[in-house]
Length: 69
Ligand SMILES: [Zn+2]
Image (cartoon, rainbow, N blue to C red; front, side, top):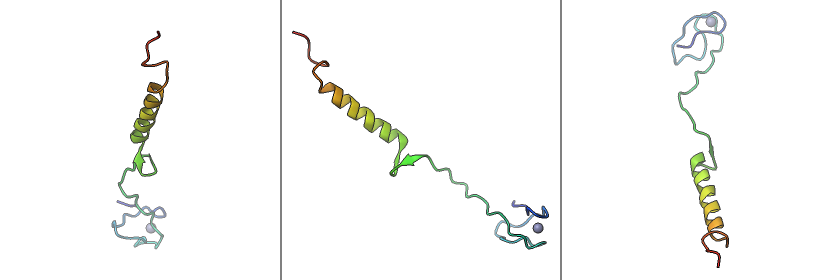
């Protein structure tokens, strides 16, 4: 329930002005929790992508996978 910041009176959810002192009420924050993401992808996807890139790059190097002769 949003209380008036000026007089502390309770106001209905849909009210934007205090019914008592006409003070503008603070808009209640929508209860949505947004995960931190980059370019629309979640963070774990980028970590997986980088990990995949690193593994492929290292597997192509001569010092991994090729036994010494
Ligand atoms: Zn008020």
